[in-house]
Amino acid sequence: MENALTKDELIARLKEISTRGVLIAPLEGAMCYSPSFSETKKVKCQICGHYVLKYNFFCDERKTITKIVKHINQLGYDAKTEFRCEKCMQKVFNNKTDSGIIFYFKAKGDKSYHKTVSDDSCDYMAVGALLEDEEIFLGSRDEVLLLKDNVKIIKRMTGIKI
Ligand SMILES: [Zn+2]
Image 1 (cartoon, rainbow, N blue to C red):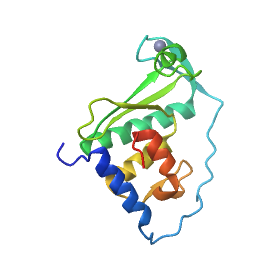
Image 2 (cartoon, helix red, strand yellow):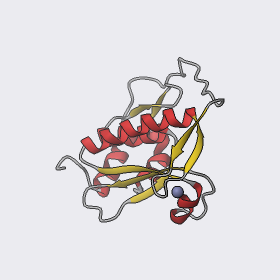
Image 3 (cartoon, protein in one colour):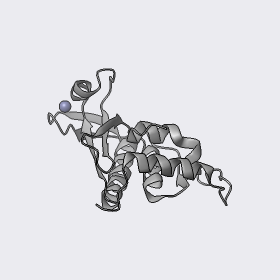
Image 4 (tube, rainbow, N blue to C red):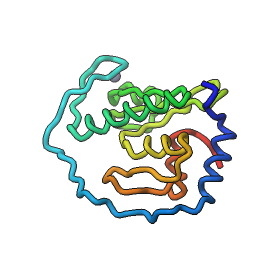
């Protein structure tokens, strides 16, 4: 846990990363990614146990997200995800009208979790990059993205304010 940074330290890192000269130019996605929206799977709400029908694409994203969150834990941060059906989602975010994944995150020393909803693995990749002190990360079409161009995502996902 001693490797984890506080919110203030994360803010300082994000600012520092944003000033870094990046050696490689962002590349266009090499692979054309076309998610299949035809097949669905039943996904269980982790609160009430109700099943929700989701596209396979969502399930693939969720697997990737689970891996990234595990990595975030290994870096010493308290983070977790939770899949909620529409009803249970509204108990936390009353403006959300769909089922989805809640991301819970604590920087070092935080007493409560910052909570946000994201089903996009790319958002989690961005958080992972910041925590790893990397200035680049991969987008959903395997394109290379710059962390400094995605500060908004970082702020929404981690609750840090710069
Ligand atoms: Zn539920």
